[in-house]
Length: 73
Image 1 (spheres, helix red, strand yellow):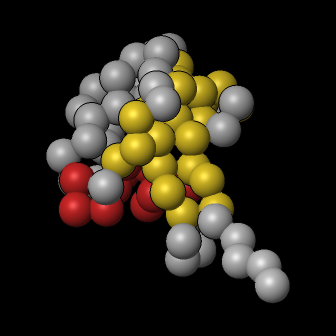
Image 2 (cartoon, helix red, strand yellow):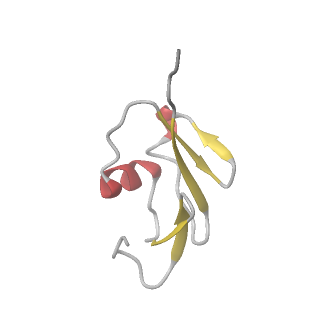
């Protein structure tokens, strides 16, 4: 669990995580140490473009998905 918020929660890939006011997708990436290329992020079903990671604020009770795209052949 992310120990940052006063009891406020979000879902990250179906798991409850603590949240803090003003948290953005960029903050989540740093906290969770997501480094894989090809990850897309969605908040409540809305895809967030990479150029918007700093502005995309996550609210209390939001459902966040970090989806790692795979290539096959």
